[in-house]
Length: 82
Image 1 (tube, one colour):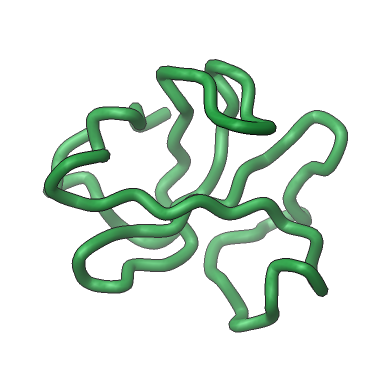
Image 2: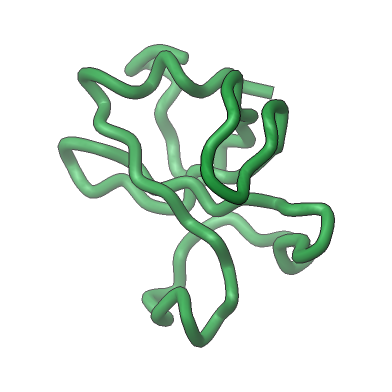
């Protein structure tokens, strides 16, 4: 993934395994915070709500959505656009 592809609502997938996120898991970029983006993971045992596109500001513990941050300069290579 490159900077030109970063948009809130873009569906991505992991091209490596992360803690609680298997290789190839898909998710949505749900927040752009300037130097990085947050991805909300669409996990098999806890899928994202239908039509989910953007973070609503609710704490992750309340929404039960697993989100991870990725630095735009160093970590976008860990994601592929679906």
